[in-house]
Image (cartoon, rainbow, N blue to C red):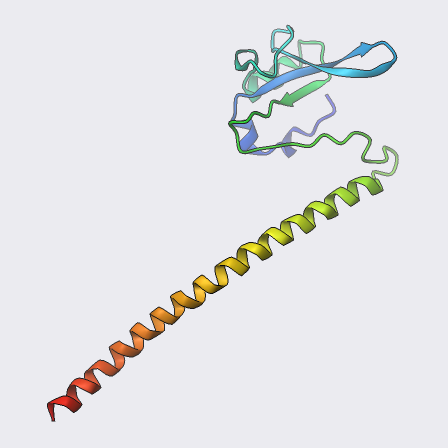
Length: 151
């Protein structure tokens, strides 16, 4: 298995959504990555009973003929993933231009979202700070006005 297990996020390791996988030829087409159970049978990405814990999947790699382990993304978890094939030159390790373009696009989308959120939050913060400062001013001047009206 050519995977650096230490790079897998702990949050994913805690979820029992792991399968093994291996390549299966499809004639002239690109081979398919077929999910497997820890017993070596075919797993289903829409059937949680065929999934395993991270620990069980890693342990099963040693005795099941497979290429590696995989995480099953579902609608119920807060994660998503993107599989971009051939995004790196295997000899130099350099990312290709397509992946750089995709990452720059999503960086721009993130920046736009943060800008939109902060532009909505700024007026709320200004009103909140105005109320707090007004309260402090009233609290400071109230004793002075009470003293002036007593005289």
